[in-house]
Amino acid sequence: MTELAALADTIRRNRATQPVSRLGYFCAPFRPPEGPFSDRVIKVYRSLPDAAALERLARCHGDYVAALQAAEVPLPATEFQLLEMDGGRVPVIVQEALPEASLMRPRMQRAPAEETLEMMEAAGQVIARFWNATQGSETRIGFHPSIRNFAIVEGRAVFFDTFPPLIHYSRDEMGRLLLQFSDSRLMRVVGPLMQRRVTGIQDEWYSPPETLVGLVGSACRLRPELAERYLAWGREFAGREMPRWAEEATEGMRHAPRLPGYWTGFRKLLGLQGEPNL
Image (cartoon, rainbow, N blue to C red; front, side, top):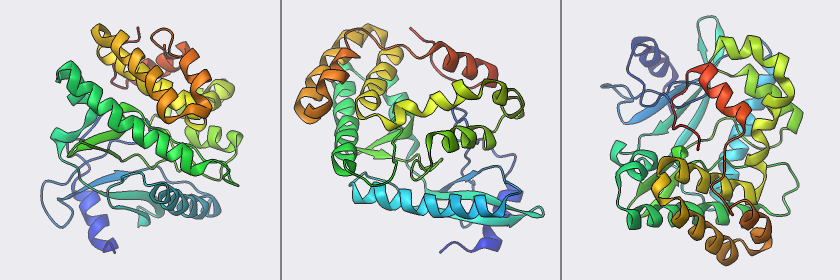
């Protein structure tokens, strides 16, 4: 169990630390260079004035991690805390650090074609396993298996994105959560004017075929010269490992999938790093 006073002190002392990623929408995770959490990545999120909402967030996160583990999704040790800091309670995730060299996105960018296809297969197996395990769930549950949310460790895809917890929240509630916890003040101010489109960002995460199509689309944007090979892999994988959703998934992979224009617009507005859309 994390020692909370030491965690709060670590966060205060390392707020200016170079983040391990600038790809995130909700926060800029960092890894302390020394101290008791030097083997952990720390993710600090915005607080809310609503204590009940924070307690619900904590419960949902615990349930989501349990659901991922029950679905045999490889996940580094992950702990959620509501940390007393700066006069409020701050949501914090402390997660076992993965080797930087294992992150799937940069590996996909530079690896030979056959190696990238092996990584796609590893990530695809996690997607199929999750959806096959959660079919018939009595609660609304989703999954965001983007290439940027995986690491490849000893040939196995390890998923490390547990926020927001995609369980129990209705579509409208999750849409509001996307704004409440955005790391961008601009998004929190402008977003409510585009609430319908912001809410729509999540739809792919709750659709088995669209999560697979999203993975393939990301690969096509990272390595456009290999797009046809990724599309062929995706169509074959859908029929082999996700047959109940194969028809819809295959339809989405006739051509290189494109991101919705409003989402690429949001990313530019927020200054998030990413590859250009095809």
